[in-house]
Image 1: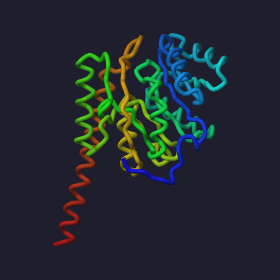
Image 2 (image 1 turned 30 degrees about the horizontal axis):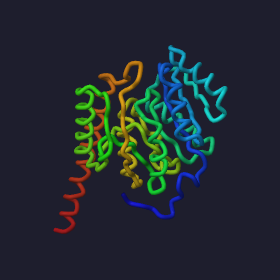
Image 3 (image 1 turned 180 degrees about the horizontal axis):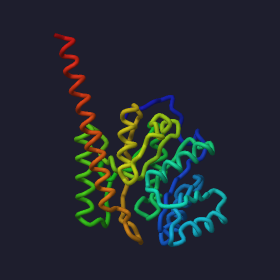
Amino acid sequence: MSTTPDRPGPSDTGPALVAIPTYNERDNLERTVEATRRSCPDVDILVVDDNSPDGTGELADALAADDDRLRVLHRPEKQGLGAAYLAAFDWADRHGYRTVVEMDADGSHDPADLPRLLDALTDADLAIGSRYIPGGKVRNWPLHRLALSRGAGVYTRLMLGLSVRDVTAGYRAYRLAALGKLELDTVTSVGYCFQIDLTWRAVKAGLTITEVPITFTERRAGASKMNRSITVEALRNVTSWGLAHRSRQLRNLFGRGRIEA
């Protein structure tokens, strides 16, 4: 892991904001918020709800009424994970935060790992909670989900030439200043491809990235948001980005050859 000694640690940048996007997560949200409070009492929490028909937004409002460090951002309709996080990043920037964390509402991301993610930002711009480095684990996933995740990671790393082991990971912490270098206004990824997109942008922008081992556990309740369209989006985008990346490499290689000749 490369380091930047003059980079301030998270404790020097004010409270972190934990962004939790929700759509039909009423059965999980309260436990996730309570666990986050126990793990990191000083963080602020932003629930980004996409007008959940099960009443998740109303529950979030009730929780916020008893917690002055919890806010709720209501959006009019379901617009996808990527759009929810982009809205959270913008909210964090407008309210003066310098650190923002992505966390799922369904209990798959253990808030007990949050302090280590934040500590990792002492020497990094992006700290990824990784399932696939030594110490990382996946619990209670069916074999086909694990195979899909592993396969997507291998394909993405090969196509884009990435060294990040868990490129699709959704539990991560960013410095807001670093996010400002990623041209977020051009991001169009909707589903879980959003995580690949931002990782790829971070690498191209020269950000310092570190991976922190976490234990990922299958959701407690409710249905997974993974579907065929999300998988197709990721495959299509990664293939397009990868072909463009390899094409640039070849042009650069042959360009140097002509100059040397």
